[in-house]
Structure formats: C-alpha cells, structure tokens
Length: 132
Length: 314
Image (cartoon, rainbow over all chains, first blue to last red; front, side, top):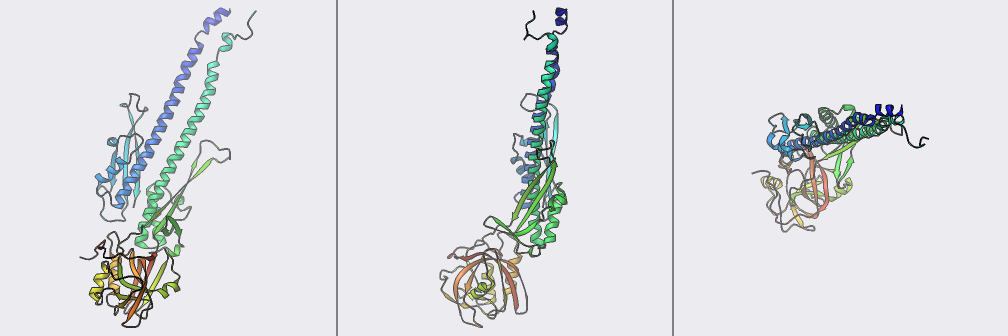
C-alpha cells in the first residue's frame, strides 16, 4: 500500500513548484516594472519642469529649444530621442505672464528592458508641467 | 520498524504550498512597501516641482500687481494647472518677503508690494499608505516648500549724481534689505542732485548722467562737491529708470552718495560714503517728490572710470 501511494504522489512537489514559480516570477517582474515606471515618470516630470522653466525664463525661446531642454534633462536611462514633447501654446509667447505648459510622453516597455524583449509592447507615460 | 525522522510522501504533500504561502506573504509585503515608497518619493518630487512653479508664478505676479491677492491668485492658478488643489497650496499661506544672504524673511500680507523680492510657497499633500504604520496613521503628509526670489543685479558700480542726507537715513534706521524714503524738494528735503564732475548741472546733462553710470576719478568719500539746482527732470529720470525692463534693470543696484545736509540753494555738500540701492517706487506732483528705495549695501565703493555695464538710452 505504501508503494502504491508513493507512486501516486510522485511529482507532487514538482507540480506544486510549477504552480508557485510563475506567480513568484510574476511578482518579481511586476516589482521591476513598477519600479522602472516610477523612475521613468519621475524623470519625465523633472524634464517637463526644466523645460517649462526654461520657457518662462526666456532661455528657451522656441518649442524646439524648450524640448531640447526636456530631452537633455532626462535621466534613468531613458532614450531622449524617444521622448515626445509638445508645448501649449504651440508657439511660445514673447510676453511674460502667460502660462506655458510642457507635456512629455515616453513609451515604457511593458516588460522590463535589457532582457532582449524591449521591442515588445509599450506603455506610454505622460507628464506635464505648467509654469507662468 | 519505521525511521522516526523520515517523513512519508503523505507527510510531504502540500509542503511546497505551505512554504510558498509564507514566501508569498513576505514577497507581497515587500512589493507593497516598494510601491508605497516609490509612490511617496514620486509624489514628493511632484509637489516640489509644483511648489517651484507656483513660487515663480507668484513672484512674477508680484512684480506686476504688487499685491498679496494678486500673488496668491497666480500661485493658486498655477498649482491648479499642475493638479494641486487650492486647499493643498493654501494650507500654509503663501508669503511674500525679501531674500538676502540666502535667507527668506517674510513680510506681512499688507506689506506685500513692490518692496517684496521673494515669494514663499508651501504645498501639503496627504497620501494614503497601503499599510497602517505602527503609529496607527493610515495617511502620510508630504510637504514641499519653495522660495522664488528676484536676484539683486548689479547695474554697475559707478556713482550717480544723486545724494541722500545721512541724517535722514539715520533717522529712518535703515538696514540692509530695508527701505527708506526720500521726499520734499531739493534742499528742503532729504535728498539732492550733486554735480560730480561739473557736467551735471543742467537738467539734460543730469538726465543723461542718471540714466547712464557716471564715474569720476576724483570722487571719494570726504570730498565736497557742488549741489545741482532745481527739481527739473527728477521725476522724469526716475520714471525712466523704473520703466526700464531690460535686465539688468536700471532701477537695481544704483550707487548714490550719502551726504551731509543739503544747503537751500547753491553751495557745497560733503560726500560721506556711498550706498547701493534699488528704486522701489516714486511719485510726486509739482515741486514735491517722494521715492522709496531698498538698501542693497549700506556702504559700498564706486569704481573709477569703469565703462558703464549697461546703456539705458541710446
């Protein structure tokens, strides 16, 4: 009887591990994904703030110049060329006291980068800053 | 006889699940903590950015409306544009003040006017925590503070043909960063035009020299110079100085002479020292004139023959 029961339960540990491991891996990958998304979002907010600041203080006089400031302010291993940047108004005013909004968008890979699957689906994060 | 320490397959059934449950609990806890920490840092960074933007907007508004209400309105407006509510940005009331030596000194709301050079903004945001902390609070209050200030710009270090009586400054108890007022007519008031090099006696000459920087090798504390005459051009000159909007502003960092009391009419006045000031406001009618200045340096030394750093009028 013991031998029969042993044969019936052979592989139980393997099956249980096979069920648990994907859940565990999912949590690990989700943690990395969330961490990377927060990091990217923080960097984008910083970039939009720097760009808006340059716009209101006059050091950035055109949308191109302002967006260059945003790209050069990116950190966290984000690719500046993948950053989409727009301003509102689209033509920057020459007078002061007019609010200027800089909005930046970045396609964050859904699976964590650097694993050879970065060409997969992306999740576009957006950050904007208004200054006057 | 069965070994006591050997478990049977029946006893092993479910061991992985039990262990996994324990590990899952730990990992899930770490995951939530990670999310909490990330969200907290992200929110902190966000409200700091908004505080920075609001302070700059407040400072900008202050330069235009010169009122506490105007400044606050701009602060709240920019905060709202950045998804920060009015409650969050006015929980600690925005303040105006002056910025000197890397220190913000607040002013009463009623004094929030053209003399203010800085605006302080504080954003408070309450965010829920995923875990109730040991203290029992389920919320976390984040605070971000920013001070926007107008830097004191140097226009040049050349003395301009304008003197202020030292006795009046002493009577007003002036300090660096503080303001003082000059008023009245030349001679009978506490100010006067001075003829630094013999070329600033006429109204036109005086105007040109005031709008530029006048330097003279012979000017030093202790010298006596002739006083200019009449009140001609005085308000027009300071109007032009105030109206200049090209940085560095002509109204900032002017060097004047601190003198002995001016005589009524022609005569000499002694140069006691030099003072660096910003022009805050001026008004007048007829022969009466009044202006408010803010002290940048109580005692400063003018340069000799330094080319003017800026040209106000071509």
